[in-house]
Image (cartoon, one colour):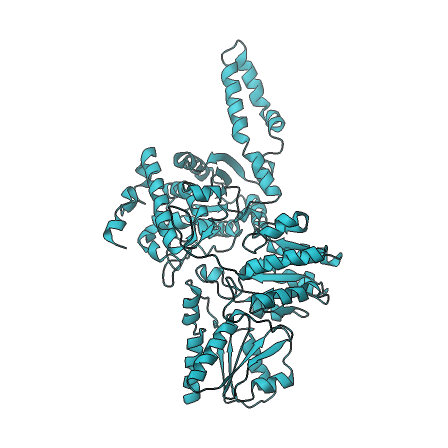
Amino acid sequence: MGKENQTRYGLLDREDISSILGSLSKDNLDELCSEIRQFLLDHVSQTGGHLASNLGAVELTVALHRCFDTSCDRLIFDVGHQCYTHKILTGRKNQFDQLRQFGGISGFLKPAESPHDACITGHASGSISVAQGMAHARTLQHEDYSVVAVIGDGALTGGMAYEALNSAGASKEPLIIVLNDNNMSIDQNVGAMNRHLQHLRIRPKYLRMKKDVKQALSHVPGGGNAVNFLSKSKQAVKSAVLPSSISMFEQMGFTYLGPVDGHDVLAVCELLEIAKGMRKPVIIHALTQKGRGYSFAEEKPNKYHGVSKFDVATGLSFQKSTPNFSAEFGKEMVRLAAENPKICVITAAMPSGTGLSQFSKKYPKRFFDVGIAEEHAVTMACGMAKQGLRPVCALYSTFLQRSYDLLIHDAAIDSVPLVLAIDRAGIVGEDGATHNGVFDVGFLRQIPGMTLLAPSSFAEMRSMLQTAVCHTTGPIALRYPRGGEGSYQADNSGSDCVCLQQGTDIVLVSYGIMINEAMEAAAILRENGVSAAVYKINNLTADFSNELLSQIVCCGRLAVIEDVVHAGSIGQSLAEEIGRQHIDTEWIRLFNTGSSFAPHGAVRRIYEYYHLDGKSVAGTCLEAIQA
């Protein structure tokens, strides 16, 4: 980025901006927040990232940095995609041109990136648990620092948050929870907690009414006695005006402060300083607007939650809209639901992300958004299935990890015919380690009675989904990637494994979207005089028959290409079975993400990083053949 662009943000361009926050006037603070919003628009529009959530948290984050020193105080954002302003104010402003790019800064908190990042926060609802743990550590080690958890953007719909609230409130351990209430997750917030917060939002009306009554009575004879009477009876008055409005947080052991305008830096700071001095568990309720300061994001915050590169002036994405697996899944679910009234759908705060917006409108009574509560989603689906419904539970692969216990205990042991639609399986790209779906193959294949299918095209997605909703002998899952299909667009889903092309020198095995890399590798090998067979696995939990194994190892050279970790991979199982049966092979090459957490960056760049792309696979195989 050129010098001209680096010096156009006024106060934000000062190298000492973090250290002078405490001395800035209200006008200066408002100016700084406007500059931060412009900076975010300028940069996120060029890199992509989480926009609306960060635009809504600017003043709140400035207030937190005005009141706390994050080099020692612990500040946890939940979910971590709200942390862009925090990163700007902690020395990473000049790295935003590489936000979420390979080798650049992460879009989430990342302690390896900066000591100001207290912990990893790529998934929701864990901040209060981490905060309580840090607060206990501070007390036991006789240290002195503040611990603050900022929870919002739907994270308070997750069950873990309530486990932590229950524990933290009872512990009496000093910590501050800032509830960033923007009434949104990625889509609209759902559930009883959202209704509870709506009641809390009317608290200012009660406070203004009480103030007005006191002022009026102070000017009439005998008014002082009436004021004293009202003060003694304030609980009764509060109960009449705001029935049960703050009982939940207070009964859990927290002092409740707010609501406060989350876009008024000084007002937020006032409550933060009060909370800091209380030395007890405190909740500050801040009201914010998701997408604040950018009209397009204000009007459609769900659309601008996560964005690709876009034109700031028009709000239009530079990336052309193309068909993708999520949308195709949603279309097929609508079609199947029309044929079978027992089909219903469950998702965890991701109706648009999983392609289910149309389904939710067409069949609202058969659509269930449970909030950020994947464990609940899976077990609720099991209950539906046991009573004769055909539930399809649509979750991202990375969030399905939370439901591992429930898949075993509630689904598999009792052979419940639950259907899992696993979106974002494999490498997802810019969101990085916390969001890559590279573990599902390993942990699902371990579960007895689980069936795991891997469509490689839209046509196979439709065929396999039709199979899944008719499956009655235990849980069944489909894993599919983020984005669209590749050059492979056929439907060869009729058998557990299919040979797409014959070859005599080497066999390439793959599944799902990675079949495109296998086909590309086979084409490159053919150009170099090597005849490569390509096998595509459709059912990842099916046993390898002796006949299939003999076909796969017929030429003694085998390469297996997968976008998952090594442990529990198909390649590992194949190699193990080949060894167990003492089948002679010249060599086996396993291409996967190994045992590391994949970095963030474009999907193609991550493929290259792990040598999973067709060109790299072909090159490695050629070297082995020619050795």
